Image (cartoon, rainbow, N blue to C red):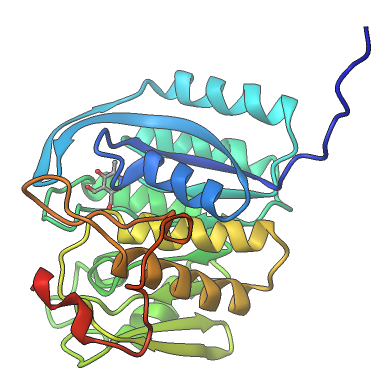
Length: 289
Ligand code: PXL
């Protein structure tokens, strides 16, 4: 019997993240984004959550041996172009994942330091923050904190007078060993959302985006996965970051509200008919305010 012709596979991105059954955030958001951007996702589940579009009701970390076994099985079988890390669930999982990725030092790693949900549910304790800083940052290519996460990761807890600027947070985070830090500015009091990419020589680029009125679930997962997809597709970091922001802005501006809580980004906006996406327009989105 003749075999079907074997096509070259799309670039493969391995994501370690928690399941969000709403598919707004978490590993399902990563999967949708990576697929939409032409990659094949590999999904290692680090925790289960119970949630709806209004909030998280429960988190069950997956046993660290199961996390490691999922990843090892995939890595022995398929060539991974980029790693992407989201919510990791436990200190044990952080340690297991740090050990696995250290066996692949040439594979770029995008770390979305998920510390809390956009709705305020806390996902990490101090021990996990410490493990992220010590074990993962030195292996990170691009770190993608929002300004609140950057502050929490960079703050010197022993000094109550420590009030670092975001640029100082970026400097401290780069000192922990990551190559680039993209601090997103959704939570800052600026007319437009300003996202700043820092490298060891300073600011690499600043991008400003019109503020959208809705509250979105999964915007950070979408952005980090889009960066990972662009790196897997061969972009340099600065271009990967710029293009990923544009993709995310479009997914957000095409977002929809399927339940009673937050909006969900539409990662397949390009596959649906719509006149909605207009980077220069602001009026169309008023109904979501
Ligand atoms: O948006 C951050 C995030 C990541 N991963 C999971 C989540 C959330 C936010 O709720 O539930 C699983």
